[in-house]
Amino acid sequence: MLCLQVLLCCLVSGTFAIDITPVQNEMFYSEGANITLSCNYSSAYTLQWYRQYPGQAPQYLLVVLYSTGQVSQRSEIVDQDPRFSGKLNDKKTHVDLIISSAAVSDSALYYCALSLLCTIHFHKF
Image: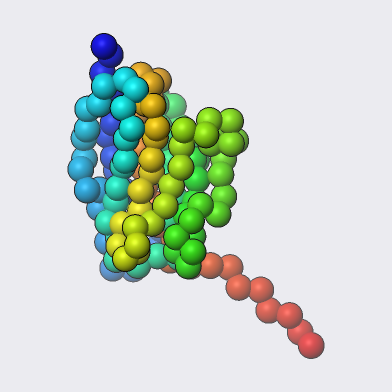
């Protein structure tokens, strides 16, 4: 039985006093386990998940929209690997990345990030 290690880190876009923190910083799982990575946050417009392998740039995974609590955008990685999903909890206090049937290749550093701003387009009438 192989073991995988998951490290979790958080990023905030902008300079506001907003908190986003991992529920656990480091986790170990057996291959085949269902994994839920969670970050608590105080406010957000969107919440994003990234994965980074040693010596490589972070890879964008998905975006969860605060207003719906559901995934609004998926990367090609997630489109090709349906084991990855995301959601907000019912109270909208933490965001989850779910990896079903974890594989050793899922061992990586995972980032949860948030954005406080949305792009607003104005139309002249």
